[in-house]
Image (cartoon, rainbow, N blue to C red):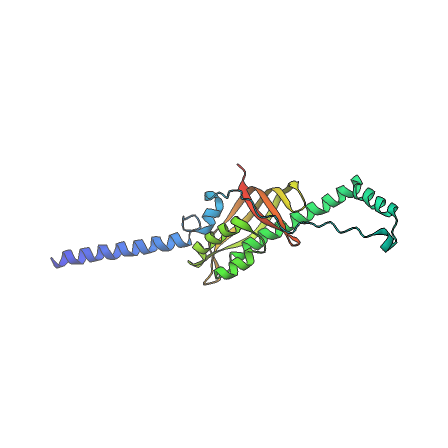
Length: 223
């Protein structure tokens, strides 16, 4: 009887060690379902959402020509310059460059926020890049992992294609292909965990202009 007790005890101990080892493996292996990088690698689709348009571009008032001494011809010249095809093309080009630059910075801000050790910090950082329902979606996802001490470390981002599909005064749509290399990040130890993976992202992105910056308000994956 004593031998049987020893046998059962040994089996129970062995099973406990196995379960414990498996639990640690799930936490540190970046291909496990508990890992944030695994969801970012294609298990979760982001749906397009519409954001609130703000900060409309105001047309400056036209002053009385008798008061400022300007002639009617000067106003006509200004309107001709405004409607000049070359001038319009230049403005559109500069606007497109600003949108693309802001978008790339937004992606960098997004990944950088995933090293935040608390949700207040994460939200503060993310608000510089996202707005609307998509901001809240990312915040809810982050809370699930940050409370477990799991973040993300991105070592490289390569933008293969960023095209402006449509743009207005304060709304734009981009077609984007980019790649990034990342590992899971242990927020407690401040160290990377698991294997490094490269993720390819192909999305259509909606942005709105708030103050002087373009923020991401919607994303949809492109199959």
